Length: 165
Image (spheres, rainbow, N blue to C red):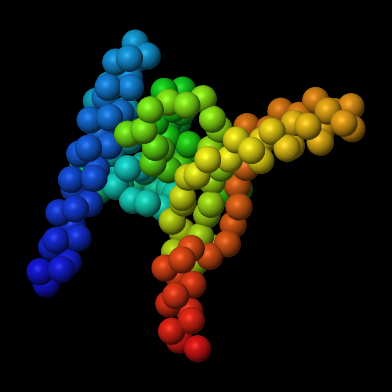
């Protein structure tokens, strides 16, 4: 049981650190980090996978906070505006920005979504966006790309599958 407890403790510390970083970002951007926004963010940050709005709603209800779906969607809009969560378009789900602790570079992220465990990884995708922009311009097309998502298998799941073979 000790390893499980240790893992839970690390997750609690990660969520607390992420929550502190989000609080600072909201303050920097002069956006109110209301109790509801904080609760919604905490539910999203408590996992490394993406979660849908109704899943957040269910999690909050189990903790005694009953809300209308529109309230969660409004909180999500504020979290997106602040840049502390991202939306995984393919699943209409949300995940906490994993780069809150890094200095802002203005570079755009790319999202890697594991089809097996559901974890979402965020990495620098600026070169891909530049390539998309250049290719589109060459075709006399004006792109509106906001995100690049790649589905596949994370290293941990790939190793588990390999072990089963």
